[in-house]
Amino acid sequence: MKQRDYIILLDPSLQNNKGEPSDNLGDQIIYDSIKTILEELFSGKEIIRISTHVDFTKKEKNIIKGSRFIFVGGTNILTSDIRNFPRLTPIKKKGFYLFPGIKNLILLGTGWTSYQSRMDWATKFYYKRILSNHILHSVRDIYSLNQLNKSGFENIIHTSCPSAWHLDTSFINRYDPSFKKILFTLTSYYPDETADNLLLETILNAAVEETCFFPQSKSDTEYLMTLPIFKKNISKFTLLNHDLAEFYNLVSSKKINYIGNRLHSGIKCLTLNQPSMILSVDNRASEIGKSINLNVVARGNLSLLQKWICNEYIPPSINLPFDNIEKWKTQFVKK
Image (cartoon, rainbow, N blue to C red; front, side, top):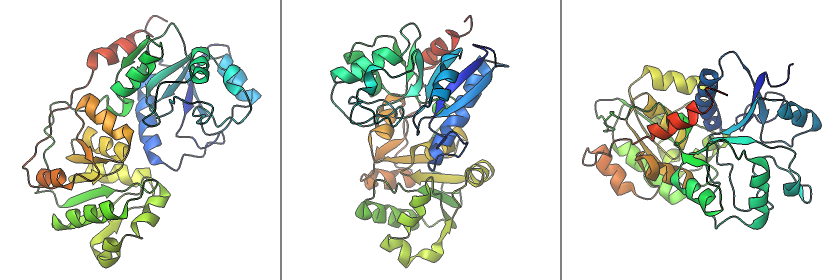
């Protein structure tokens, strides 16, 4: 392998460096978009994927050092407290932030792990060591942009998440009562029995012919099965497998309305002009929603969901930062 003939992608959609996928298929949805972007920018170059879920060994560090560019993309990997929340790799060694072992990393549509205060000194030092200082970095929401700017990082622009770059900004995201299917998702790692029972009740009251559930993570199905409304109406639900191909086939071949707590399932549906409402359970959906007018409402705001289903609420048009997306992409054209 010749030096600088290949591109590195630090990839959350890989659970490890044996090629096993992440349990969260939302990571794979993001990866599919990132793969398209990088292949367009670096036609003919090999793209080597390295997992962000395991520590970098000496082998991975040597591969990274020999690469032309190193990207990490589309994930909530940024933090204000690197010592307690090591997000790039789960490093446990004392003082790792002083000698991270990588440098010139480029952000591609990354975001903040949660709502946090300003970076502490160790985190700022760490990012100064690993992030490129001569390339524009791309973040996926305004909140993440502001967090980095407040800590002295100026070569940052907002592009939204790569999975959203091909959204149709002319699409009117109106619930379509003529569609016979509702596809919904839940988030098992943020359970709320009261809110999610009310969500299921609202979906059932929409009285469509088929109500399908997609488990973006395997544990989502286990969580669904604990909900009283599901138990009482089990025959009214169709459960998909934890399989991205099955999900892609459904949303690309059938007319559906999407309602759910899973951000990237909703974004994928919207890229196919399927009416979609995303119910936020954390900062990720909320901040992308605010940044580009994505149809995101708080999980507990079922009144707005009901208005959307009744066509009493039509979300504003998507507003993508196209100029910033092009600015980020074109900086690699002559390199």
